[in-house]
Image (cartoon, rainbow, N blue to C red; front, side, top):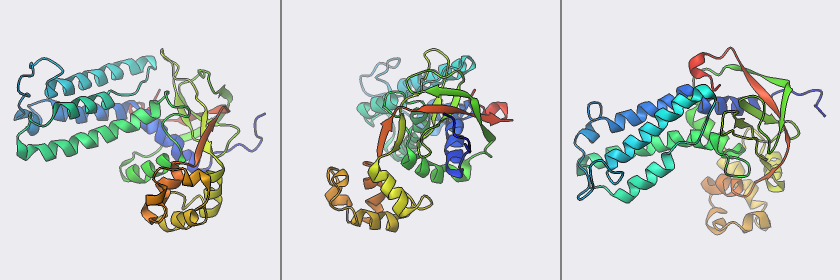
Length: 295
């Protein structure tokens, strides 16, 4: 049954808008630009002076430059597929793994630190797309914890959010592909994390809802929604009240984390979530500029 007073909270609006931002064509093109700066000699100094690994065929994926070019080509392919509402995780993980296996001999020593920093920033940027498109984990790649931290991280560089509205006429269920591409909000769980889904083949179905378990709900009530995950002292105080809670003590890093305020949030977050099937409602962007649209 549809709740009669269904509205979007500020927290939900922020989370929905973040997912639309990370799913947008403009954000994907931003990844392409960052890759271009690393790959092409005419625009990037580290690559201009790069040296292939000894014994590595220049055109093979055993050459770091070729690994980056392959990643760039895959992103270009994803951009082309967006017109058909086809979405996917990026090749960032595979690229990062290949680059780490190839070692550092392809750059001059003075350039390595600069390249490594830029490459890590690129992988972090791509990770926002991957978490948004993740259909391999039970509840997707996002939960309240990492969305809260990511918003604080990117809020200063975000474009102005477009208005959003709930569409009670468009709903879906976990395990099914919804009728519209876009962000969906759990109907029967006000603290559940929204998901981005798409209709292009292969489609991105609605997964189970990532939501709070008993420990997470207790943290929400004790710390307060405005301070949850971001106030180290309050999170640490909460942990001190749960030192014998098996949901916390089972954590492999409990002993190292329980007494340190800066580790309290991550300790709780690793153990504060569960997933469950639910009904979903479509959240529509209103008057969104074409270059920012996810659909």
